Length: 115
Image (tube, rainbow, N blue to C red; front, top):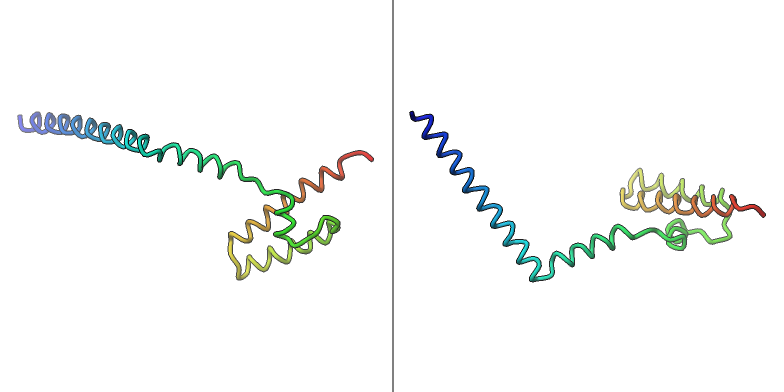
């Protein structure tokens, strides 16, 4: 008998809790829509995803000019990557790596085209 009552209380309490959470969530969505927070969050997310490193930015990060030979770019990359792996920051190391990837893509395209 007591187990039946306890089970009923748990089921009823769970139902009330689920309804309260759903109502609070709906209210939070309504408040966010009124304040424009939801739209701003979506716009910021789209901006972050579409941010791609340009060739100019990659060259600035590695400190190379357009006419710099590929071997020199690789030397600069190796030096910067190693310096940041020993006592630098992971963020800078990632930027250096992304810059090399960007320039590899550009370098591959320029060599892949027939003369």
